[in-house]
Image 1 (cartoon, chains in turn blue, orange):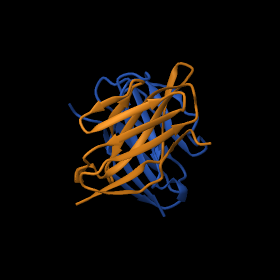
Image 2 (cartoon, chains in turn red, yellow):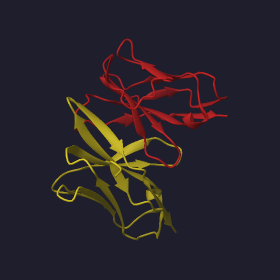
Image 3 (cartoon, rainbow over the protein chains, first blue to last red):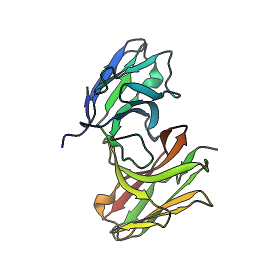
Length: 115
Length: 112
């Protein structure tokens, strides 16, 4: 079974530029998550989708970050404009359903460096 | 107080040693608990779910103490391949939604 796919794997941009990340979850997984992992920290949830609806975006910096999952399958996360502190790994995860005991499967992540 | 706190580490142990990681959580409404393993420059992978009665999987034992809001992971007979960062994660219910909150992780290096 194919895992969670993400692209690009690496991205280097200058501050104030824009960047977009793509995620394709495991087939059949209704719930999709975007996490930000800063070096030395655990992953922090940015946004959670259930099918194509947002169920939690309380930690998403909405002045610069946006995400969509229009058809309830793949998703994009955008940062516009980027700041130095956005340098991190952006992890996408999916689960069959967003319940308490559903295992989340993570993609390989996109490593973003903002110069 | 942070939602999920772990031993800061790092831990350096010889092969064959027993090592224990501890994690505390602040929200008493937390529903479920997990240990994830993250290798260097890789994604987190689920190692174990943690059940109220405690559970064991080979050399790994996880325990939960709801009264003290504390989770532990014990690794016996550690191998070189156990070297990784171990992340504690807690699922907290908010309305009809569950949110997974991670600790900072504890780095383990097993030395020959």
